[in-house]
Amino acid sequence: MDLDFSTIDELHNLINQVNNTYYERFNANILYLEELADNIFVIYIIELRDAYSHLVRIFDCDIANQDGKKNAQMHLEKYVNHLQKGLLDTFRKILAKEYSFAKKTINRRNLHVFDQYIAQKASKLRIMSEENSVDSRINGYIELMDYLSETRKQLEK
Image (cartoon, rainbow, N blue to C red; front, side, top):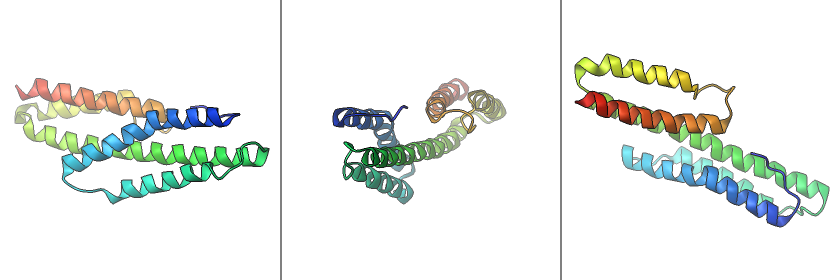
């Protein structure tokens, strides 16, 4: 995502785009994970706090001058990085929980097949590879979770 802006309106649009892309999903993942695990994950609350800290600092900067704009961009990048990191972490945690639950519902004779299908799909998507962009890995997690759900349904029969 390009984080360049020239005006306050462009900055607001960029923040809106960041929130729609990362914050909304991160927040939804936190809520889902808390329901799934019946637990509050303080680590994600801290990640959000750190992200908000940078978001607030953006508005302390005078983007009319070059130094202020650079400072605002730096805080915007850190805001995005915190949201991305938290989002990827929640996906990992949700996937682990869903995988664990799925293994309990699948017929024992299909467990090996299930493990193999999920491993192959995860490898193909390369969701853990730092070489892939964050957005690509996020989309990979979404696709892998959908695949896990579909595969579980097929093997439960």
